[in-house]
Structure formats: C-alpha cells, structure tokens
Length: 429
Picture 1 (spheres, rainbow, N blue to C red):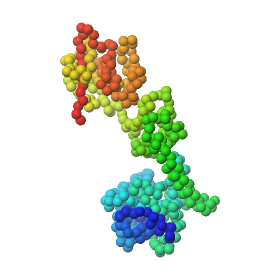
Picture 2 (cartoon, rainbow, N blue to C red; picture 1 turned 90 degrees about the horizontal axis):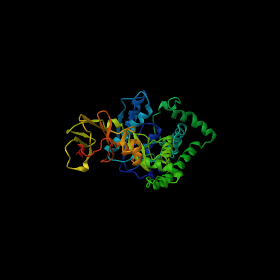
Picture 3 (cartoon, rainbow, N blue to C red; picture 1 turned 180 degrees about the vertical axis):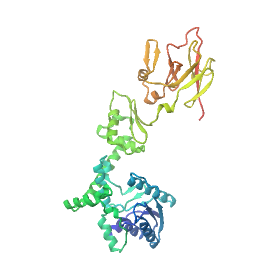
Picture 4 (tube, rainbow, N blue to C red; picture 1 turned 60 degrees about the vertical axis):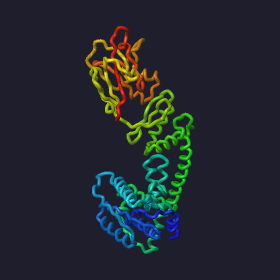
C-alpha cells in the first residue's frame, strides 16, 4: 500500500492528466491511486472490438470513471488491419492519448506499465536483437508518457486492489501463451525463470536500469564529441559509434541498424574514398564529402532534373533558373558562358552530367568523373553538375560548380568564329 502511494506522491503532477485505463487490474489500481491526488483526471479508454467482451470492458471503465467522478473519453477502433495488429493497435491508442492531451492542454499521459511488463519487454528485445540501449526497456518518463508503477510488480498491484476491494476486468487473451510472443513470456518463460530465482523479474529490471544509467553517461560524452562531428578523425575510435548514433538521433533519425552504423564507420574512416553515401531510414542518406558529414534526402536524379531542349533565342526554365541559348551578346558576362558551334543551329540540350560523360580538353578527352575528382568537387556538387550538349549528345560545356563552366576544346571560341552564349539568371520562386 505504502509503496504504491509513494510511487504516486513522489511525482510532480500537473493540474490535468490523461490516464490510460483498459479495465485490467493494473490500470484500475493506477486510476484509484491517482484519484487520491488533487488533480483533474481524464480517463482514456480504447475499445478495439477484438474480443466478444470488449463492449463490456468499455462499459465497466465508463461506470468506474463516473463512480470516481472523473472525465471519461472513449475511442473505437473500427478499421482494423489484417496484419501487425498489435503494432497498429499501439499506434492507434497513443494517437488517441496524444489527441486528448492536446485537447485538455496537458503534457502528461499516465500508463500502468509495471515491473513484469518491463521484464517482458527486455526479454523480447534481447530475443529479437538490436542495440544495447533497446535492452534498457521502458523509461519512467518518455516525452509525455509517465510510468509511475515501473518499479512495482504485478503481485504488488493485485495486493493493493484486494486491500482496497477494487474490481477489475480480466482479458482472457492474456492467459493464452499462443496469442502473442509477449503472452508466451508472461505465462511460460517468466514463471519458469522464477523457479531458478524468485527475484528474476526484479533482477531483469535492475539490469535494465543499469543499462539506462550507462546509456545516459555514454550520451553525455557523445554529445560533447558530436559538437565537432565535422572533425571526424579527432573523435577517438572507441567513441565513434556512440557519437554517430547520438548525432543521428539528434537529427531525428531513429531505429538505425548496427549494420548501417558499421557501414557508415567504414566509409567515414576510409581515407582512400573521400566521397560516399550510406542509405539510412526514412528516405535519408548519410553523405561523406571530403571529410564533411551531412544528411540528404534520397531522391531520384531523373525526377529532379529532366533534360531540357533549348531552341535558339528562346528562354526556358530549369532548377530555379531561366536558361537561354542565344547568338546575341549578353549584357552580364558573369551569367553567361561563350562557345562556338559553327553551323549546328538546330537545338542544344541541357541535362545532368553522367559519370561516363567525356569532355574534350587541349591534351585529350577526360571523363567528367575524373574532372570532378581533380576539381575536388563535393558529392552534392557532382550530382548538381550540368552539361550542355549538341543534339547528338556531344558535350559543348560542363558546369563544374555553381556558375563556373568549362567549354569543350572542340567548341571554344577562336578568332574569326561567331560566338554563341548560354545565358542564365536566378528566377524568383
């Protein structure tokens, strides 16, 4: 009794809290304990309609809320998926809880997860594999979510319920070990572990807490190194993985696999490869460009810029610029490049450069890939390179970086030749 009272009293509660109540013993005890506090309580119940008794559960929680003189809110799950039901149900209920928190202007959602739930979570994470921080289980506070019972066992909650003559609903699926992997752990695995050590649940929770503490220390040091993430080689090798993980999470990139971290470290520490990229999650790529580190949205280059056919003295638009191939000398030389194409007066093409493209130089042809390396272009600059070509795809000029162009030796303006110009300007968007 005293442990549960202290678990509630030691928290600093706002004026209003959202309390998730399923009708089971855990959430009923949570609601009863919180009702002793001078706060406004909004009971949030989700009717998933997955069991025949779902409606009766909802009616029970509604009557309980009325008896305790607190606000009751319910949402029904109508469009249930055919797969990943457990995951989708979790997303649905937390969307509901957050919507209520916004409506009632509170930043606190209280759930009844306890020590047995924590032990099940840690075991599931261990079995399924992943990063060490995932073995830390649930936190007492995660954003808006508060878990005041995380250090209390299921048995302690049941004892409180009996002592206070509380009634609750039993979910018949909870006792079915074949219903979910968590049920198998709850009904078969954890009871067998307690035959080895009666304190198995407590010890698993202690391990999770130790991992949380270690991860907190690691994050504090990684945060210091991450301030100089651009100076990658100054970060001690042992700290590179945690620093990269911390930096990615700070950029809102989560659920990174260990294999992706390993790939990224190999790229970043490969001095013979100054440029490269690793595809992460959420359509984002980690980009290394001459020891500079950055993130970039993954995109199809052909969708970004399609080839543009230019007719003489007609203006076109591409990549926030207007482009003009003209035989009239432009006023602004810094926004134009001169070339000579002789009698070829049909059309020219403006397109993205390909690594296999070649440009004619005084001492022979050079691939644009080699030209980019010689010019030390960053990966972003390479991907932005444009080429001006003839109708049969011979390169007239290549945009090296920004507005700097190189004209092919075959099309340079010589004495007594008529120059043409490619003219551009930035367009307002």
